Image 1: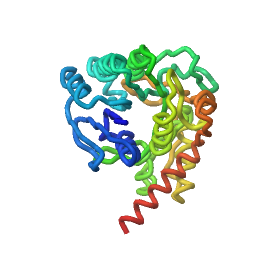
Image 2: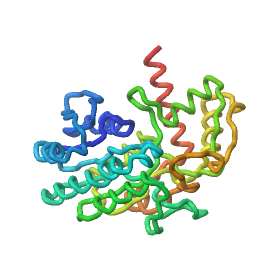
Image 3: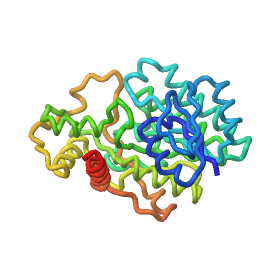
Image 4: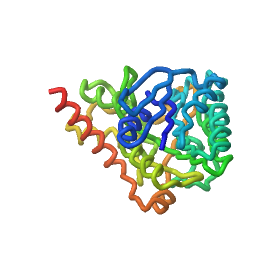
Length: 299
């Protein structure tokens, strides 16, 4: 079986490469190369060049394509709507059309921010979407393309992890700020259901072996505020939390409006796969274990 991965040099794509290349032949694409191993064949190009995208699809002929590529800077999307539409929606249209014609499968990685955040409890798959910003709206447009054929799967999620390049993830920024005792402003009124890229990759591996289709939420089985996440992280890493400030997202002046509640109900995927999703503390423990392993290798 051949697995195609877009955005393969990103935080999640890199983790997928590390895991899936042990078992499968991988066709990886991104603007720049990432992890290189025997089972990984790279082709670097701009995914929004649709001629090159179609050429890559025809040459690689993936049995399953995991569409990870995204512009994750929400404020950038707000100022560059055409680029967000091209990457999140139009590339998914091209990919879905090809995979449908060739009876191949699509796993489209979406976002928990497709809701307006006004619901007090967890969001389930049947809840009405109402994106507040261009990033979420264009990802939702991509969802519709991914679900336009029988072999499409959409996974809404919120991932945390280690990056493989110079950019810094939310988790890395938070940890570095805790280590350096720098002031950290974290929202007490923004809730999410984070899952580590490693744990999410394990779910993807399971889905490759035991296919599911349609729309699913995939994240922690609980919810936590960004502030609570920071406090829990400081305890686990045995670092002082005195530099963490509790603030409201309403105090910020972002270009793009953010939902306050992004908590996902994961009952559907849990029961379908017969697999217990980790909780938010498990997510932190996975990150701590990887941090310790990496430090041991360096030392």
